[in-house]
Length: 125
Image (cartoon, rainbow, N blue to C red; front, side, top):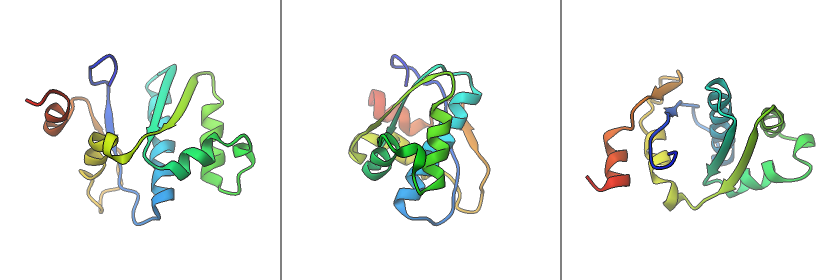
């Protein structure tokens, strides 16, 4: 959401993984999507406290987890990004969009318009 309006949504199946890796992949893919769409200012919200701590750690660039290092590298490009942890209850629309992906379809799927249930979440209509 940007000033109350939908910009872009996406989902992608990543297969079975631990919650931390699923959170890291979501952040990594989200950063790639935002960069490819030309965003210059980005606030990333994640309900994975562990992922947020790993990425925001001052030693993240030398993490033993390659995906954390890749996220740090993406964030070092010529743009401004922040990453915040939010409780999963406050992330219900992102969770619902993630669950729309088929576990057998690994393609990145974009939502130019919000799915109908997002209208309900934000407007009550």
